[in-house]
Image (cartoon, rainbow, N blue to C red; front, side, top):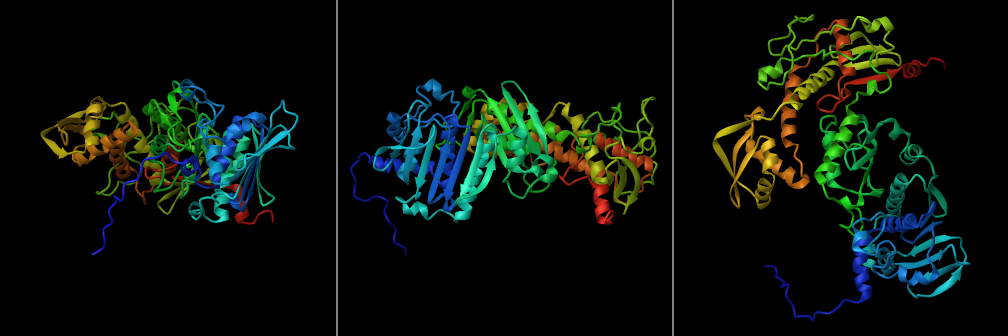
Length: 600
């Protein structure tokens, strides 16, 4: 039998911890690795009004970190105070703490870093004849030579806490984290120049430039080419930046940047809002890329929730969540084919109709065509969805062939390939369309549009579904009763651990309603907003659209193919099917020339 050690030993006297140990404990919260030091020092440089910041590293920042800036500098008599815990020039009252507009404000970074390294500061204020250098360990203050600004040197990180040093990774890994820390600042401050040196060699440099150029310099041309601009100004907020196209999604979440009032943050509420916007255009577990800037009144966001200042808390989280989600959805809604060449005329109504909605009894107001299909009748196990062309205005061209296909983003249909693909020609070259995936998206968006304007009707249960609930679920059911009712859910609290479901959304009859209710409660508790009902409805509509879309090996006429292309051009999110797979691909004339070695 293993010996059981008692947690209680001889009673020890309560006493104050030594200042050095207190600082080392604080350092454990603030300083995780060299990149943490770089982040804090660059924060201070930006707060000092620097226009140029240089970061010099040795051994990935473990042996040495030197951050130089041309900011306002620190007067000589304030240098010793700068190294004391909770000493800062950035706030002086609770009111200023609740309206923080600077990157730093806690006044503990330099003291924490000095507790686990050999630190020195050389700084010159604009009014001083020369700089002064302060050694943090000895407290010695001596004259130094440098221009106006500040240099902070950190040597032998974690030398006084060797156990912490063992947790550091290789120099290459730590260097990558340091570079990423500077990149995050560079993206938020294109008006400031940044340079990173390692072992005496220039590793990266971002010169002062307009924001788009800074994004191009920091994230590459591919990010610009495969992303879309986001701009929205809901009440009390301003959202801007770029979000990646679903086609450019990555295997890892390593290209996701969110800034709140210029501060890089990791916020689950914002991340969830963005993920929701990508819900039915992203395939599998792929991760979207995005660069998002959120501007909000400082009084409406609390940045003092974590020592590293990487987390924030919003006064109205639901408002921010919804604003981010809608801004991203609006940007993703435009089909990529329409970004540069709009369609020749606005359709008077959708060209694709489905009887499936009425078969399901959802009452979505989706029309049904009475025409006979021009292609052969489908097999008995498929659903007949009719595809036809709308009559165009008299002054509009009757077909893309009249313009050689040049004015249509997806061009004019040429033929079918393998019973699965449509081949079309546009001004750029060859377009290949997956006809089932494309039609599936068109039908799905029509069904969603009908559902969006419909009221969520509740269907009472003859026998209430009684189920055990956690304390959080009970509290959420009580606090969010009105929201739950709008979603078609009637949850009654029977006791501190039991809930009764008395009604559910009528359109979702037949599923596991208790599981759905629990999912809604979990989302309301975590994000103050629930999309579980909407997701469940969309899954139903997606299944209907998939079964109703034109099947493979279905022969289409040229007119029917062109009808589908025109519908794609005016359908939101037409670049991906309901499952996130692409619906079309472009093969340019230049690419074809290269494949056939023309001009060589």
